[in-house]
Every structure is written in structure tokens, then in C-alpha cells.
Length: 459
Image 1 (spheres, rainbow, N blue to C red):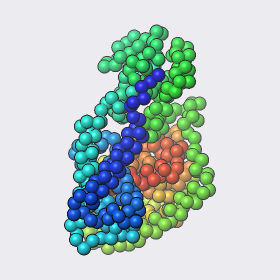
Image 2 (cartoon, rainbow, N blue to C red; image 1 turned 120 degrees about the vertical axis):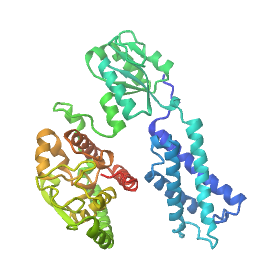
Image 3 (cartoon, rainbow, N blue to C red; image 1 turned 60 degrees about the vertical axis):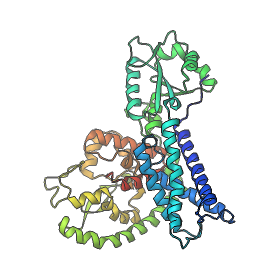
């Protein structure tokens, strides 16, 4: 059977979180025991509460500043940047919540000690991880099964989109050599022996045709019974990228376009509506506070009206009026509606700032409060574009099954869409959200939205 020493993606993220917490708790404990760091009184009866608060803050900000993004975790510069940002945010919030953390001492150097007690152990541990622990031998080892072309396509997808997986070998009916990949003949391959020799952790089957299955069916059934993970290429792609595969009008369409039960779950919908109303009130108060500053700056850097409105298509195809802070030059669409694009020349310098920080979207909290939008969902599109996209993309209308959102899965995963190919990609992300909609996915979108804003990744 397969050698299970490799870590899956979720296991590696859990591993990072666990050791982050252990080294931080250890660092604070050592600092409090053997230095002048007395902010943490190890004899205090509230010590457990203090540590739990510290852990929650650290994990939350670590997620926001991408400490658990596997690509960042293997890059020294990015992980140092993430640790510093996470530690600063954790320290600042921690000292301002004295009811659930220690009271701020008169000696303000204790704040510096707290920062160092958290950051130095984290930096040391993560550098050890990058240089001595992180290794391709702990990657998910894949065995690909399918025709030569299918294996090539899957190999390219894995190398470009999910490089944390390692392709150990392939089994194919074609004798064509696939570059840098050991391939076995489908007719004679002993799959169990291949798994043992190459420590395979997962088998990805690239097609379902009879030519493949008639030759290896009994072997796969035996391996499946023994606990080996076997998955189709389409399901593998969906799981790894968190978007639906390319959609075609066929019976397979109904294998992928299933609507999450949460879309009809009253408890979930009531909870989401409550959060929408609560946060939209907070958002509108924030808008009132920043509006005078935006107005004054706009007089010089963004001349013209402060707001603008557009008709958009919402839930069940009903139109409504959306409100935004103007970020483009006057008469930007005098020749008719045009998709906004990256580095759009119609966007003013101040408008670029508004877009990158998502401040231009803040007035839409009014739409959320009215119930025309939700905080999370597919972004609402203009009727002119919807008519065009529904002709080009047969499944586009499905995204209107739920309320449009202020942010969404497509927005945080594939920001720009100024052509049909990008619109198709965003649609696949939107449909993935509709299929997998849940509190956990909603929370993940919120975290990714905050990250997008903090790192000025625009929209």
C-alpha cells in the first residue's frame, strides 16, 4: 500500500498553525520566566484566558496576512513580511483588550518585549521550516492514469496551478514519451507495485473510457478497498483550484451544477441577513466619516460628481440601481458601455486609489441594507453585458439564483475580467460558490477580501 508520510495541503496548514502556536506560547513563557518581561504573570489565575486570546488573535491575523498561504510559507521574504505584519497587529490589538489580556503596564517597553517574544520564535521556527523541514518529499505524490494528451494536459495544470503536488509517474495506453515523467504501459502495469516503489499517495484518473478501465478496473477496485485515494481529473482540478471545471452542455453538467442546500436553509439565510444589516450599518457610518475627506480631495484630484449610479442585474434577473464613488473621468462612457480593464486609462489617479482600497464600493452598503445585495455573492453586472454574456456563456444566468454581493469568491480569486475568457473563469468561481455556499466559505471570502485590500491588489 501507499507510503503515507506525505502531508496533504490541509495537514501542512494544520502543522504550520500548530507549531506557530507552540513556539509563541513557548517564547512568551521563556521570556516571562528568564527576563524582565513581566507583562505575562505566569502565576495569575487568568493566564489560560490570556493565552487563548493571544492564540485567537495570532491565528486571525496570520490568516489575513497570509502566513498560511503555502506559497508564501516557502518564501523567506514573504514569510518574514507576513510574520512582522501579523505580530504588529496581534500586539496592538492585544494590549487594547485588557479585560481578556493582561493590563497594560506603566513601563511601555513591555510592549516591545511582547512583540519580540512573539515574533522572534516565529521567525526562527519558520526559517527552520523553510531550510530544513520543507521538502518535496513531503508533497502529495500523484500517479496519473489516462491517454498521453490527457496526462500532458494534467501535468501542465499541476505544474502551473498546484505545484505543491508532485507527479511521480503516469500509466498510459500510449507509448509516447512524456517529458520528465516515468510512464508505464497500461496493458502491463502493476499499479500496486508502482505505488509501493514511488510512495504514491493519490491516483488521478484523467478519463473514464472503457479502454482505460477494462485493463485496470480490478486493480483500482482492489486499491480502493485498501484505502488508496483515487479521484477523477475533473474532481481533482475542482478541489485544488476551488472552481468548477470547464462547463459543457451535456449530462455531466448536472454533476457539477448542484445548488448548496444553504441557499434554501432558513437559519443560514436569516443569519446572513442579520450580518448583512449589521455590517452595512457599520459600513454606512464609516462612509459618513470618510466622505468629507474624499469630497475635498476629489475637488482637486477627481473633478466631477462625488457619486454615480448604474443599473445592475440582481437576484432572479431583477434590475436595481447600484451606488459607487466615482473613480473615472467625466463622460467615461460617452461612446457606450465598455468593460473596465486593468490599468484602464479612464480611471483617475485618485480613482485608482479608491478602487485599490475598495473605497469606491462602500456606498453599496446602502444596497445591502435595502436587501438588493448581500455582503457575499456574485458581483452584479450591467444589463447590457448580461445580455451579451448569456449568449456567449450558456450558464451565466445561473449566477442570478442568489443575491449579488459586495465581494465574492470570483472577486478574490480572479480579480480582472475585461474579456470573454476572464468572464468565463469568474463565472466558474461564482458557480463554485453557489455549489459550496457555507458559513466557512463566506468567512474565507471575507478574510481574502481583507487581504486583497491590505495588499492593494485592486479588483
